[in-house]
Length: 327
Ligand SMILES: [Zn+2]
Image 1: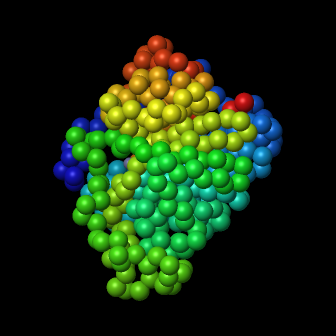
Image 2 (image 1 turned 90 degrees about the vertical axis):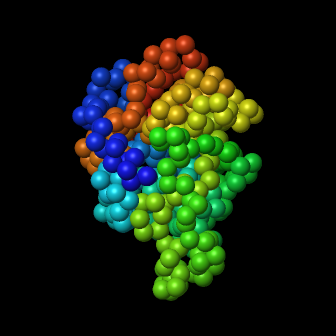
Image 3 (image 1 turned 45 degrees about the vertical axis):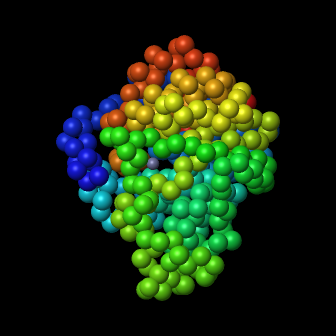
């Protein structure tokens, strides 16, 4: 893995530009500082695959991630940790109280900041078993987590969340950071209370390096509130269809970080028949968020744009922290 990621660095082209070329596709509210209108969901992009959804005074987060581990530490599988200052900056764009944090899988760019955000927002984490086990090893209490599996339907405040199975993109033919080599889950301190409960013998299960944040069980979600339905995933692979029961959503947020997910773009959009299509996870996740949106080196938005002309739904883009109301 190290070698393939190093190859990626070496083959990386000069950073792609930002959204300015596609400003006609970027949607944003004219008056972002007012309360969201009734019967709507307001969507705020938090970078990478992170979103805040707001409805009737409530907020829900998906994959919030602000620490932005750099490319070199990631490629070299170094020790990483959540950066509380960056999380605090990011959370300035999020409501002070959050009903839940949904996490699509346990990679660091989706889960690393979840423990810190649970502590600061009092949200409960809804994620697959590996992700829950990782955050519990970092001192989040079991009663702050809900382990989700495909088929579950959760009612949380005004939200109905349907949990679906999903696929993770491959990088050079393989899902990055699979969990096989992780220490056994039995050493998780689940049920033992807060941070102080982690004894020395249990620290083996705490994630330290990039690869300790192993993929876990990829999930997608359908989020309903105010009569609107949003589908969100963090990627996929071609030839593995989404759940056939999910059709006709108002907004489809589709992870598009790598070529695999791009190749499934048309089939996913044809299946979901969304009113709006928002490609996600397209930004350079290794760059600090205050640099603004630039496209990731392995994305190909021009190809998506060409393809979208023959697909249902209106293709839109969101800039960081610019809310947009789904009516
Ligand atoms: Zn991932």
